[in-house]
Length: 391
Image (cartoon, rainbow, N blue to C red):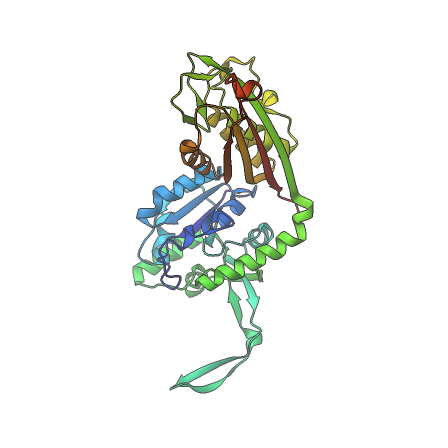
């Protein structure tokens, strides 16, 4: 069955205090990307449609590239209300879509297990599936002027989450009916209910919190910290990289993806970017995947004079497919000349665009050895990575 996911990310974030709520970063990852990655890694999801504000479309696309997201079919411009935003995506979906999962990007901690539970519960006898959680507090209704009118039986009540799953033709049909009558609902299941559809419930997840205010960020970080403490000793990986190249005339000097004015450049099959080569080796080391020569041999003509930034991008694609993500990289470049410190901010920005956090230091060799004599430049790097563990 062809299953699509809509991730709604077009809200104004009024209670959060910023329209860029979904771009607020937790652990160096924007909030909306946490949910996107979960759906992108599920085999039964064929494509993803992200809905966002018009002025944020390009920003979303740039993050999709940084985090190597593969299944996003389109980034759709949102509407005035959440219902309008979802409808904008539904109208664009191909007719052969059978199931659609609709999820709010403001619920970043949605788990693979919850999405599977919702998806697997949908069957031809029902029109939709929603995840719910029990209400533990006593609930009262207020009749006016803050006077209690009575106590509601909480056993009959549930708090609703996303994702919600629907047969595509059915949800599109009820959306069109709602617009013809000027009806707006608080969630997608409301429209199914209004037009006599049958909605089934499954257990939700207490960790699947909704980010509404900045205090909710603290809750998210707390949940992540608890999970990290449990798995830290199991999934941490460290890699070490080192590289050196000879300085020769007639070559450009490129370090960290930055061309540096100098009378000599580094000799090599590619652009001989000694810093990026050390970083690649460190990343591959943390992944237990050999070294740069194994993946990009200097005997292969396709890598002749290639930018090392391209090689780094390919390396990250490979390691992320192995569920290994670099967390932090610390590196040192050893060069007597030229002075490198003015170019370090630009180098760091090149790495940031690829989703890497890198610290760079520049040192001389105090006139000693091949570096001190100006014969070459060397670099070393240490990469701290995490490996995503299967449940």
